[in-house]
Image (tube, rainbow, N blue to C red):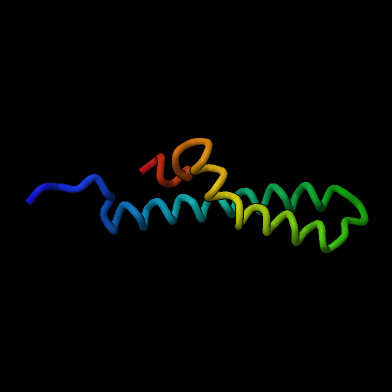
Length: 73
């Protein structure tokens, strides 16, 4: 059988774990930034976290050809 160019299940799981760690780091950074500011509205926090979750994959894929986890694995 010929080997396809697609990654296997184990490689995909490793990429998801790496991407999850990256997202957690982004959330910690945003939380630290917001904690230094005073009177931050809840809507601003919601928008920031939605921006991280919804746009991480499309932005990384369009700029770098894949997410950080995909490129490392």
